[in-house]
Length: 176
Ligand SMILES: Cc1cc2nc3c(=O)[nH]c(=O)nc-3n(C[C@H](O)[C@H](O)[C@H](O)COP(=O)(O)O)c2cc1C
Image (cartoon, rainbow, N blue to C red; front, side, top):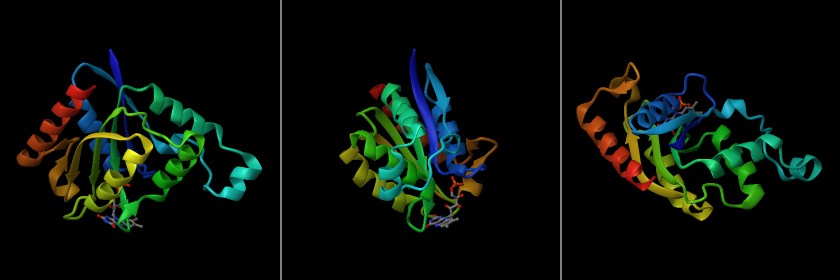
């Protein structure tokens, strides 16, 4: 059986992006889903001085190995001031220091959601432009606007948006 990972580019304990990643990954049929949380990885604030003094943290290697050994990636990015959250960018920077590449051409369903009307589209565009430089293989993207109106009890309640996500999941599934 194939296995996929699902996680959010956020360190919020109530992350709406984690909720969306969990929902989207539950729609993928016949796979084992491993839900990750960036809080479970001990990654101090990246800096080149710390890197030269202390090296790359074990948990950066651990996370990179998980990315290397999965069959697919469901990732939903939080948007902070039109960019990655600090927690995601910090993990991204640490992991990029190991092999440069991060995503090993694993099929990726890349998403974002936010409480506002753009649904994290700005950070989604940033990631779409950047991830290919790190062997990101983005099969589909999906943005969910107005999270609290459109997502309830672990599901998307807006029918059109739900259909859109389900179509994206189908394409992602085919690529696994
Ligand atoms: C510092 C900060 C900056 C934010 N900037 C944006 C933004 O640029 N665009 C946006 O749509 N939401 C923004 N938000 C709202 C987040 O989308 C919201 O907090 C969301 O819950 C973050 O996702 P998460 O719950 O998965 O961490 C910001 C929130 C914080 C705390």
